[in-house]
Amino acid sequence: MSVNRALGVRALRASRVLDLAIGRIGKKQTRAFSGRSAVMVDASSVSISQGEDQETVLAQASELVDHGKWQLCNDGKVLERGFKFKTFKTTWEFMNNVAEECKKAKHHPEWSNVYNKAHIRWTTHNPEGLSGKDTTMAKFCDEAAKKLNELDVAPEECRLRSTGKVEAGDCCTPKKTAA
Image (tube, rainbow, N blue to C red; front, side):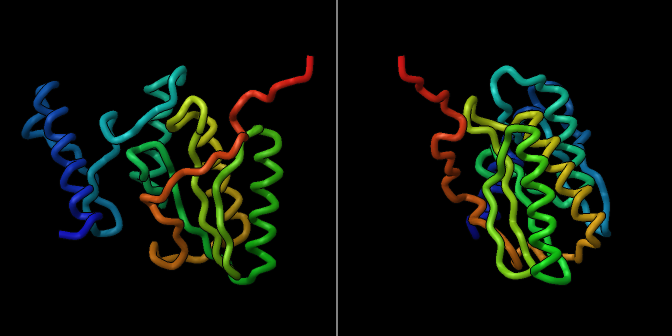
């Protein structure tokens, strides 16, 4: 069994345990779109940052994953997605637009770029997990990509490793000031 399939089975089992606990057995939550059926995001599949409004972040993440192109990874702490544009210049314009919004939001992604493709991961490092900033910035990325006529991209075309280590550096750690 592949690693991705094993992780999916594990997530499905966790979802079934939650269903049992709240009495939803027989009412599996699925949604059909694009000719396929996908398990909808639920509270057990998302690791939300401490201090965040759980319901709001869950609803926003659900919208991005269930009805969009984003995926949850790293135990539900990360939203990630690939983007593809016609040219390198357009891809760079997209990244500049995202960078400007990042400055306003005081929140940055992990990302990579190869020619006309970009891959973006949103997570909050401190406190660790998914936050409203992540979901807001993911939605901004979708809107910015649409304005630049984003092309369809296959998931394997531009990826960071979904199970890879999430790196933060010292971006989310309070800076020490000299006394």
